[in-house]
Length: 65
Image 1 (cartoon, one colour):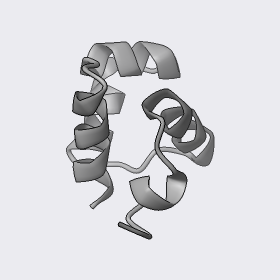
Image 2 (cartoon, helix red, strand yellow; image 1 turned 120 degrees about the vertical axis):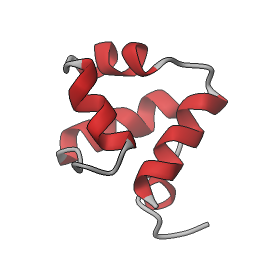
Image 3 (cartoon, helix red, strand yellow; image 1 turned 45 degrees about the vertical axis):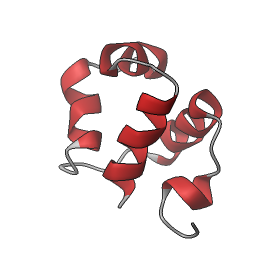
Image 4 (cartoon, rainbow, N blue to C red; image 1 turned 135 degrees about the vertical axis):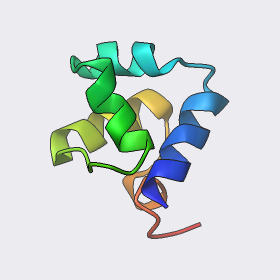
């Protein structure tokens, strides 16, 4: 669920994967692993993603609709 919501939130903001990776200061491949559900981001990157994408951590993590 996290990967799907992450991709949706990124697309809703019209951001590329590269733009988000740059914001997080990680490699594109590392970010793609988040969207392809191959790896979960560390807590600090979840916080950064929530700020960038303007979503709550509860929503992004699938704890609420």
